[in-house]
Image (cartoon, rainbow, N blue to C red; front, side, top):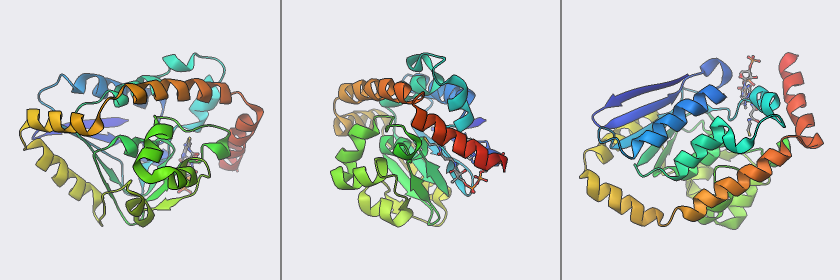
Amino acid sequence: MISQSLESGVRILRFDRPEKKNALTGEMYTALAEAFETVNDDESVRCQLICGHPGAFTGGNDISDFLSYAGKVEMSETPVVRFLRALARNEKPLVAAVDGVAIGIGTTLLMHCDMVFAAPNAIIRSPFVDLGLVPEAGSSLLGPMLMGHARAFELLCLGKTFSAEKAEKAGLVNEVVDDAEAVAKACALEIAAKPSEAMRLSRKLLWGDTKPLEQRVEEEAEIFASRLTAPETIAAFQAFMTKKAK
Ligand code: COA
């Protein structure tokens, strides 16, 4: 459910579960974790492009998955945290193409990208607090750095939807374009064609020390895990499942 291909040094990772708006399951996180754990030492990959389908980048973490492991497994051992750790350690350029919904991790993942292209229909939202949860993927650190506290609060705590245009103004998106995937792919190929070591070193300088990011991923995961069994969280998940059943 994560399809992968390699083209001229660009590894394309596609969320491939369109019937569920590309909601991410444990199996999908494991595939993503494997891709990000190996990419730094894989010379055949000079850039990664992450995308979904028309109308769905991703609907975020699969909510029934949340319900199945809440309180039963150690959060730090879940595929999602394995993926987030690898993402925080990523050293290769990462480009995203957002078409349609980018919810939860679909939003916070963008903060780890070097270039983000969004179609005009993009819906960028992270309803963590509404679900009784807290921001993840290091977004509580990256969000304010990227867009300032006020906009990060609006997105990550208030759960407001950012349109493609608003996300561009906030600095989360580079450009709003009709065919986000085609433009993002052209950008990824352009990155891959540049001298790879100079690109890697330059990117590293721009990102700086990633230790605080890695540490924040762990801190968030610990709080997130404790929230999964909170009554307000369980009520929010059940409300989603009930709405779905109707
Ligand atoms: N977890 C589980 N299933 C999800 C999902 C998620 N995060 N996102 C979408 N789906 C499923 C829906 O339940 C539905 O399944 P069904 O056809 O079996 O009923 C299918 O994907 C299509 O979604 P639907 O809600 O009909 O599409 P929509 O265009 O009306 O709305 C979303 C799309 C993404 C806005 C909406 O599904 C949604 O709000 N999902 C939850 C997002 C969320 O809270 N994610 C967690 C963030 S931490």
